[in-house]
Length: 138
Figure 1 (cartoon, rainbow, N blue to C red):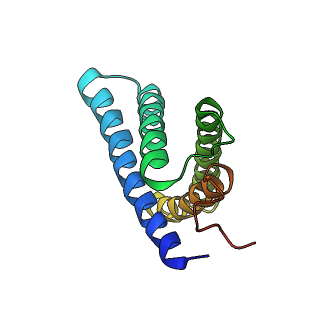
Figure 2 (cartoon, one colour):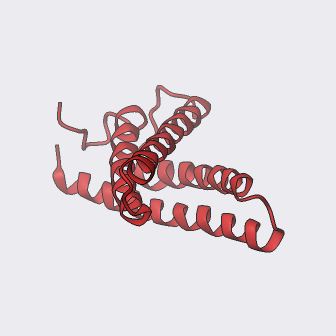
Figure 3 (cartoon, helix red, strand yellow):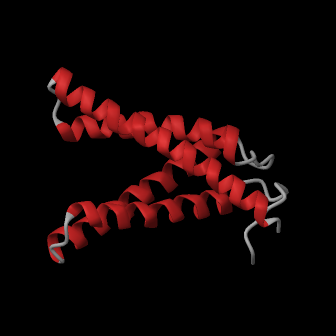
């Protein structure tokens, strides 16, 4: 395993994630503030757009397409992993804010770090080509 390549891949993953977050947050705020849309509906729309961007950018710049997997299956797995990450975030926010009564700002930082690791590791395992030259250790 080449640790330099793995770190480089993780940095690219982080950059794509920052852009995806900006798209998600920006669209949500625009829909709520400019269109007066319900925040929950706006959040669902912005999350969907963000996931589609994240998929294309991640599979183009971060991960290597697996030849043994169709693009449709790849996208479905990507969406499932993203929704699981959203679920992890939601559970951590609920536990931290509602049950433990910790500031939502601090809990969100922790939840974001946990989901970042989940997203990278799960996508590395299920979506990255095994011959990409920098597999995770067994």
